[in-house]
Figure 1 (cartoon, rainbow, N blue to C red):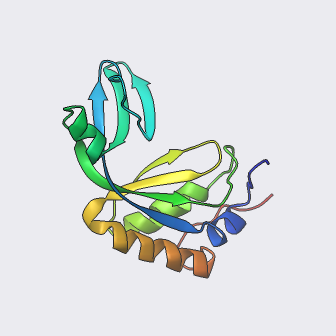
Figure 2: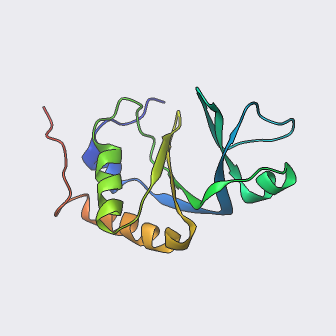
Figure 3: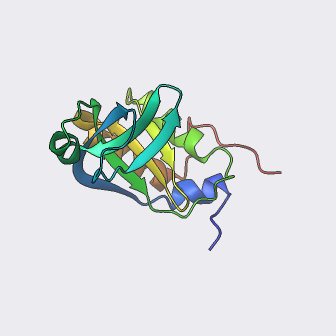
Length: 141
């Protein structure tokens, strides 16, 4: 099923879910056997991976950025314009940094662990208002 591209519909239907596990970002030359990351990207310096703290500890990896994972359960298209811009702007306005990762079906946000409840409150309010108010919404053509 193709995802939606309309940012107004996406914001209103984002249906965020907060995962219980704590996560960290790690950088390794290669992924250790048995490590199952949530997300990876290959960079010139090595492989960056987002892993649970439990997995990082089990593999002797030192992580950075203790964070919570929030999945936006709306099926968003990879080519959707402005959806994550609205969300990251709303979180930034609340003083919450975020590292978004686009999956094939959904977008995922990694926010500071100690701000996870604040982030969820911002996202719920944003969904209820449909992104109206001070948040930029792209013009539809």
